[in-house]
Structure formats: structure tokens, C-alpha cells
Length: 233
Image (cartoon, rainbow, N blue to C red):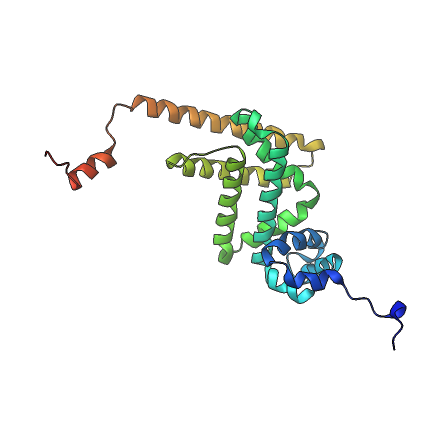
């Protein structure tokens, strides 16, 4: 009989992970992968290294993150979630809208400060022609997470225009930040402030435009009445 004191160790984590939903396992695996990504990219080698570090069975890790697309998708989703948590903890609901959006952008970059190479490699994956859909999807999701964390409840056309504008600001800021070597990323912070100024000007112009045309009948409602005339009875 084998002496229990000398029996081979069995990782309780890897056994337990059989019962963990893959959606719950992915953020943990991504976190464990991050030290490996600068050297291995978003690859099976980085995934296996992270799985070993976290005590996750490699086969289960492969099910959770089968390829680079799944890895970068999970990485950005995890970043969205941690950004939202940090904004709530910072008391975002007490801030003015400009400060909320600035906090979202700054928080997202500060949290990735030690993972610049992982971000760079994630962008390289999304820049591949076959992954264009991934890039658009993750950018939209991030802009949506920022607005939702900022307390936006718009459901009309503004819901979409806000996210398109913020997505363009974030993508431009991200590229600027990747090449920013300034102390405390002060150059990027200045860049963010300039872009937010631009957005505020756009929003002001939109408000003035809407105000100027408030008296104009809604064409959709007009056409709807032509299609479904109101009974005179």
C-alpha cells in the first residue's frame, strides 16, 4: 500500500474545475495567462502556461478558450467587467457626465497599464481581416459597458450614436496610449481631455439642432398615420 504521505499530489483545483461553468472559468484563466502573453501571444502555449499556474486542467482550459479569437474576446470582456466594478466603487453616480466618461476611459487604461503588450497583441488579432467582426463587437461592447457604468439609460437613436462616438474616442485613445511613454500617462490624459471636449461640442450641436427643429412633425409618425389612418368614428 502506498504511504499517504508520499502519494502523488492531485490538484483539487483541476478536479473542481470540471464542475465550474466555462463562462466563470474564462476570467480566471485569462488572468493567469497574462504573464505569458507578451512572450507567447494569445496562443495555446500561453493558455497552457496560465492553466498550469492556476491549477486548471489543460483540456478544460482548451474548451474554455479554444483559439486566439476566444482569448481576446474573453480578455476584453474581463476588462469591461473590472472597469465597471472600479467605476461603481469610485462613486460614479455622484459625478457629472463628462467626469463619468473620463473615468471610464482612464480606468480602462490604468487597469491595463501592466499589460500593454497583451493589449497590443489582442489588437493584432482583431486587426486580421478574418477577425473584423471580433474587433467591431468588442469595441461596441466596451463602449456600451462604459455608457452603462456611467448611468446611461437612453433607448432611442442616442443609445447608438453615443456608443459609436465613444467607441471612436476609445479606439483613438487606445492607439495613442500604446505609444505613450510619459510619466503617469499624462500625455494620454491630455489626449482624452481633448477628445472629450470634441464630443461635448458634438453633443451641444446635436442639442441645438434638435431644439431648432422641435416644431417639425415626426415623419415616422406621419407616414404611420398614412399607412394606418385613424378612424373618424
